Length: 507
Ligand SMILES: [Cu+2]
Image 1 (tube, rainbow, N blue to C red):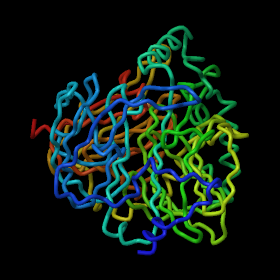
Image 2: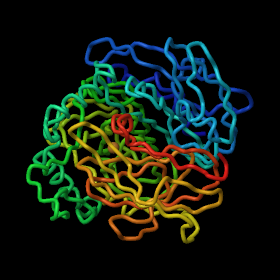
Image 3: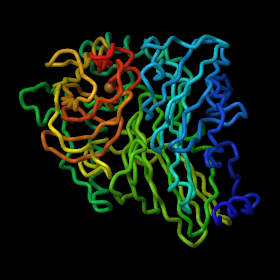
């Protein structure tokens, strides 16, 4: 194929481009005829010129992540090569409950040196990922899990996988205790952590979003303005929309900062499919494709009716597949991830042969946009759920006590119980000042309402519920278990924003 020949024979201008060979995620998927060895290991990474010991997660040949073919088995032997107990969750796949990877639910942690075999259908294709469901996620225990369809393989399109992360030289335990201490000393939540998300910062981000309306027609209509649509919450001191809990030391794209970004060789006039994974634990981003026109074709690995644009929000746990057309002339095309409500950014550079690449700083001139539901409202699943009245509906309230840094999912309808074959609706209302990307394990759901308006939205596995917003999702229940339903902000989850959907017929 032309694409493959191009990739093999590409002559790189010696000094202009240093192509990365570190990320072989664009290699051919291996035939799933035998068990794949996948190891959790320890590795040393250089961040901001300093050495950092982090986790690695990859195959025995040293390659990070997994690339599989849709319809094959997920036939994996997971080996813990570290000195710590750990376990891996397959985010986006729908394994049987026993193989889901949340410690003691029900599987035990994998001890040092121990290995465990996983075997289940990998399902339809998509951009997925895998990560520890523990604080180890902060120490980069995460990797892409790409499942390609036959159509993906036949398409003349270059695949570029981008795994985003937030990085700190502090341990996750230190970060968590810092959040709790700052919360309890602030007497009401103002100023806990490194609060960069006061309304001022938020408003700048919103103006940024305003400015992009012309580009892809997003409106501010879906923006939930904290405090403004809740007149009975007249608390002037609480006008802070808390965007970022933690000031990180770096924001990484494929393990690198924009001071030394990955440069990915692309073909003049070629087509690129970005597979973007927000593996950050506590940071939302907006993807900015710069001068290249983008087309969003899938969210959380599941196809949507394409949406053109240059900027696309991606919260923690979520994935975006964006198709790009590279122009026929040579050039360098940064694909940036803008930190929400702040100036930091990360990203990679796509570059054709002969392109000169100018240095990009890690800080932008303006704050990144504040994430809202404007895009979510427009998304339409290519294959929606069949229309059906839910058998069970649960009204859920997302809330938090910033002072003690305790987060909660409350249900007005009791514990989340379902029976195999049910259609279930979860109607969430966020009564806190932080956004919560809500993730359901073991299932894909469809977004069916936003702020009270019914939609035939995206099918996905993680949906953002901004402050004071309401989002309802529906899913069918074919997969017995006690399935985690939680916020994908690691520290919200660790401090209580975790619940379970339990199949009462099967446990
Ligand atoms: Cu949260």
